[in-house]
Image 1 (cartoon, rainbow, N blue to C red):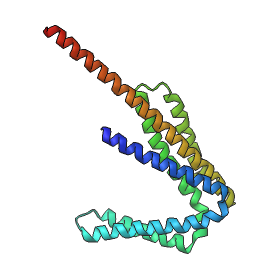
Image 2 (cartoon, helix red, strand yellow; image 1 turned 60 degrees about the vertical axis):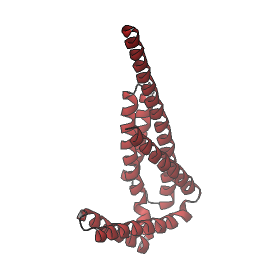
Image 3 (tube, helix red, strand yellow; image 1 turned 120 degrees about the horizontal axis):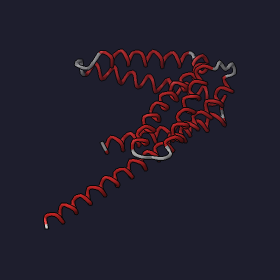
Image 4 (spheres, one colour; image 1 turned 60 degrees about the horizontal axis):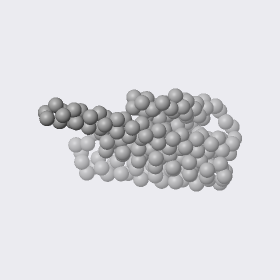
Length: 198
């Protein structure tokens, strides 16, 4: 359980740092970065897709879902390479979906923080709700100018990254406090047993 928590914490921190970095870049150079990001994303998707396909070809026992996922990723990657500007128009929607997924993860960690006795869980819940709000805004709000959309995406990503870091910090603190309290109870129980045996 502890190793799983550490792995999740590391993943969230890395994701948060990347979100903040990407958000700052998008705010400073929205127009210039958009097309480059599309090409980079297309390349990543193609590589991931080819990886899934090769993995399936090497091990036919794997689920066909892996093959289907690989083909879909390659097709999406090629489409982005051919039509980067069209993808740029729906890029805010993609980021909106990512923010909603991060919001779900933040909600799970907020519940965990509350269960471990964190008194600031209400603040974490508010942060999570704002994360959801950013995601819904990017998906629902039709923004005609891609450049303005990229600035908004940048702001949303920076908020998402910083809020994730804060949530992880609070959850880690709550879990650590709960663990120390449990260990203290165990020590007291052992001491009482020793006194009774004497």
